[in-house]
Image (cartoon, rainbow, N blue to C red; front, side, top):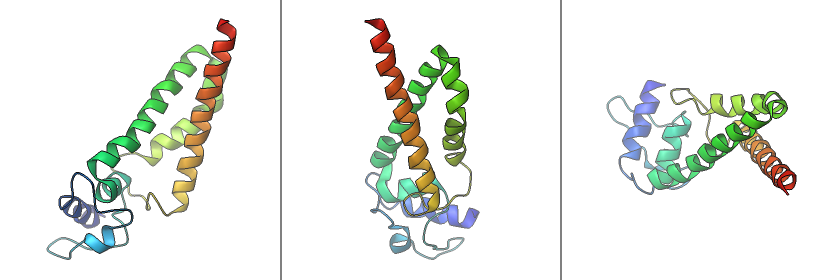
Length: 137
């Protein structure tokens, strides 16, 4: 997969700021020395950079980062929630491990799992915040 990763990085360099558009890797990739063009670059980070550029990448990752920190705050105050929702957090973390080979972010079954787990985590955070605010009053 290193050749495919390299092709993704070379394709990203063409449109660093805004990317080439969703599912654009196959259209913007060019064959060359140590480059090959598949349907996607087989890495979530590289695919996001190729498709939505640095701006989209930062926006998508901000959702994950804010969710992560909110989740840690909830877990710090409520140990029961920590053990119940830790598997969801671990799945999200392992899906976005930087050097892992993966499917396409926008089109595979993995994305269903990612968005489902993210929804569970964000829903848990929001319900815990509401419960905390009610207890404060």
